[in-house]
Amino acid sequence: MAEATTNLRTHAAKRLAPEDARNAAREVRARRLRAFLFVAPLLVFVMFAFVAPIASMLFRSAYNPTVANLVPASLVAIADWDGEGRPSDDVLGQFAIDLKRLANDRTSGQLAEEINRFLPGTSSVVKSTARTLRRVDDGTLAQTGPALLLDANDAWAEPGIWRALQEAGKVYTTSYYLTALDLEMTRDGSIQQRDTQIYLKLYGKTLWMALIITVLTLILGYPLAFHMAQSSTSRANFLMVFVLLPFWTSLLVRTTSWIALLQTNGVVNSTLIALGLTQDPFELLYTQFSTIIAMTHILLPFMVLPLYSVMRGIDPSYMRAAMSMGSRPIPAFLKIYLPMSLPGLSAGALLVFIISVGYYITPALVGGTDGQMISNIIAFHMQQSNNWELAAALGSLLLFLIIALYWLYDRFIGAGNIKLG
Image: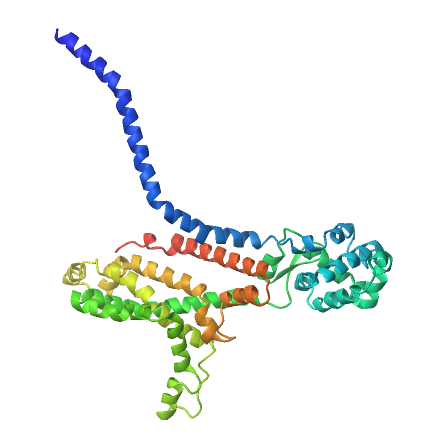
C-alpha cells in the first residue's frame, strides 16, 4: 500500500513538473520584460543623443557625395584621364556644360568650395568661369566649351585643377583623415607629410594642456578632499557648499569673470601695478595661461567630488594603526591611504582630462589664438569654413585618441593595477 502511494505521488509530480517549469519560465520572461521597459527610455535617449551622432560623424568623415552629385557626367568623362597634361577636349566640353548648368542653378559655389579644399586658390577660378559660361548659348557649348574654359582662366590648362576635381569627386575617401593627420597622398599613391603641420601640433597642445589642468586640479583638490573627509560632518557639509558653488553660476558668467580678472586693465594687473611689483601690465588674457587657469577653476569640482566620496569611506584607524606600529606619517600615507584613495583619484583624473580635451567655450572666450584647443578648430570647420567632413574626421580622431588613452591608462596605471603595501 505504501509503495502504491509513493508511485502515485511520483507520477503526479512528474505530471506537474513541466507545468511548473513553464510557469517559472513565463515569470522570468515577465521580469525581463519589465526590466527592459524600465530602461527602454534611457536606451532610446542614448541611441539618439550619443550613438547616432557618433555614427553619423564617423560616416560623414569618409563620405562626401557633393561633387559626384553636382558634375556626374564630367567625372565619368575624366575617369580615363591619366593625370598627365591637360584632359581631352571632350572632358573640357562636358565640364563646361556641367559648370554652366550649375551657374544657372546658382550651385557653382558649392563645386568651387569642394575643389578649393583639395587645391587652395581655385575657388575664384571656378566662380569666375561659371559667370562667363552663364552667358553662352547651350547649343554650341559642347564645341566651344574647351576654348571658353582656357580663355576664362589659364588654370584650366594645368593638370592640377583636374586632379583636384577627380579627388573631390570620390564619394568615399580617406583624404579628410589624411588632412587631419597633416598627411597627403602623392600622385603615385604614397603618403607623405604636408609641408605645414597644423593639426598634429594642435592635438599635442590640447593633450598637454589637458594634462596640466588635470595635474593642477589634483594638486588643489586632493588636500581639500582629504581635509573634508577628516572633518566632522557639519564642517564637511559647509565646505561642500563652496565646492558646489560654481555649479550654481552659469559657465558663461564664470568664464567672462576671468576676462575681467586677467585683461590688461583687469583686477590682477591693477593690483600688481598698485603694489609696485610691475610697471607694465602682463599679457595674461588670450594665452595658454589664461585657458589653463580658467579651466582649472571650472573643472576643480569634478576632481574634488570623486575624491571626497572615496575618502569619506576610508577608516581613519588604518593610518593610526600604521603609525602605532612605528611608521612615520608620510610613509604611512603613501603606503596605506593613497592606494585606498586611488579609485577616487582615477575617476577624478579621467573626468577632468576627458572633459578638458573636448572643452570649447572657455578656450574660445579666454584663449585667443594661442590658447585654443582642437575643439575650437572643429567648431571653426563646422561653422565658418563649412567643411563638415574635415570636422568629422578631426572629431573621429579625437574620439579614437581618447579611447586609446583610456585603454592605456586602465591597462598600465588603473587602480586595479595598484596593490597595497
